[in-house]
Image (cartoon, rainbow, N blue to C red):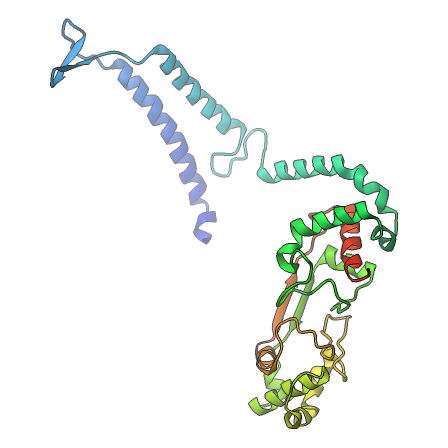
Length: 298
């Protein structure tokens, strides 16, 4: 794909565009100058099955529209982007158009959000109208990952419970929405030991939440868990400062059971939530925060 951004392609596009227009104009001029020998009945001598070909010139209105179209095309290419890297006299771009429309829309709906902007998130979450606005923002932008009911799915956190990777306070939720999150667990198998050690640690992790496990392997894996405790804590209760999950609450974001945990130890995981501060205004994020906070604080 790198070939499509080098200097050849703008020249190629410009050549094809202007060459096409020049060809059409040249064809029209050529056709207007060609003199056809006619019979007395205004035919050119071609006949098939009793049907004679008349030599009727193009209607002048058609020729006029053709010329106007060519002039319009040239004017458009002068005023707007269309010739390679040339931005046009007006400097129009789809990005500027998008930003202008977003700004216009934000100005239009600003009064709707303004009355909630100064209120605490906890109070906003109690207002039905505010919750409905926040819900619409959520459904249009967040539901693709977290689900329309906000209960998430594998790899996407449930927002309706009290299990928060980075914390569930209004300020933390707002920070997460604004800046996004990038949760990284590195592959830990080499640090844990051999394959037997990995299985033992997996069973110890299962034992922390009271899940079905092999008690013998769990006891053997307890000492090896020390390499995991740096992030998840000695008791496996996680660390919201770095987004390390609580392993003792029986909530499994990436799958439950020995096989799923072994896979995570071997492969690690990189989970990314995008930042939304460029798309939403602070007032919109305030309402979205109130809606998300309210899901687990009813």
